[in-house]
Amino acid sequence: MKKILFALVPLCFVLPSFAGTKCDRTPEGYETNCVHIPGWKDPALYATEEDMKGMVYVSPEQKRKMEEKIFREKLQAEITIRKSQDFRLDDAGALAEILAGKPRRF
Image 1: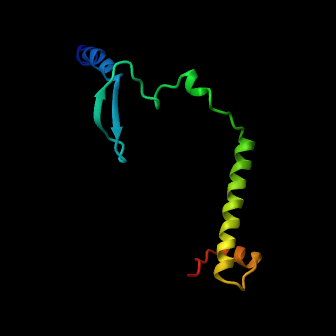
Image 2: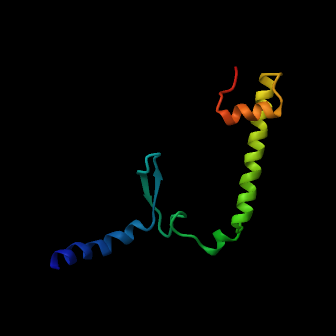
Image 3: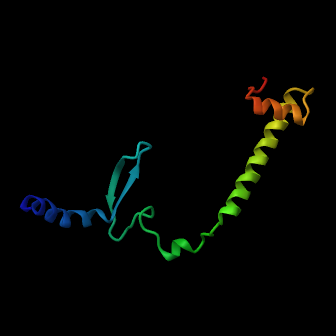
């Protein structure tokens, strides 16, 4: 028990000093170039009411509709590309190629 307290008590003094530390993150997730800025809070960890003002709640139904619309737009773009590469294809033929997993012609 004393060993645990011996380890935790210094942490109580050290950890608050990291509260204002701003660091750059590498693609691997490591922190580099750390700078102590008094009063700074990481926006990834702290969200305030001011931050939440511009956010809009999207219901699952709205999200599904948006994703479906994006999917249809991308599918139509892919069909258009395939039709422009092979003038003999119509919409149904291009869709059949996409569903069959055939790569585009060059």
